[in-house]
Image (cartoon, rainbow, N blue to C red; front, side, top):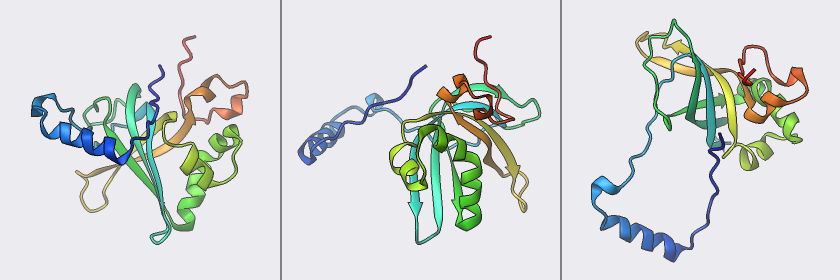
Length: 176
């Protein structure tokens, strides 16, 4: 399943015309925006939606969109998410950069790139990933659940010849 979209650059005049047309469109004909959701622990196909690096805050933020559910933990009490639902993860300061390398190093190596900036600016958005998503309760409010990533690969790495390219913990069904 290839759900990658192609970006089209619009002129300022085209953007204003599109916006003006939306103002005259009946509300029930305008698409809604997928919202942020807490994902149940499990394995998913995720699309890379947006990547940003805020140097002043020493933070990298990645936003993912749900494309497909491959497996959900039986222990999770979080309800299922809809296609298009979003979640984001942050990598803060030097420790965060080390976590980023641990999680995305094999992906960057597979892509033949060596810097985080190259990955964030040129490779994250539009990429398809298979990821094991975790749940973590808030320390002060156990009803508040946060998501994290345990393992992540590009979908095309699932068919890669190198068995080391697929991290332990990621379960990929190759149809066999």
